[in-house]
Image (cartoon, rainbow, N blue to C red; front, side):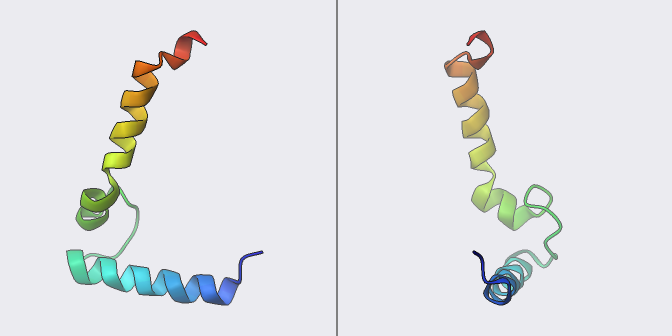
Length: 58
């Protein structure tokens, strides 16, 4: 089970880092330049992989 206090504490640290790096609050990963730069590649990998394995034909 997740400790909600610890989760909130760590999420706040994360938000503060995002604000420090981008100057913007975190509303979503894709709409923030810092999180998009750091994490946005994952979406591209996901979509490329699905095309390569031709998931629709399974």
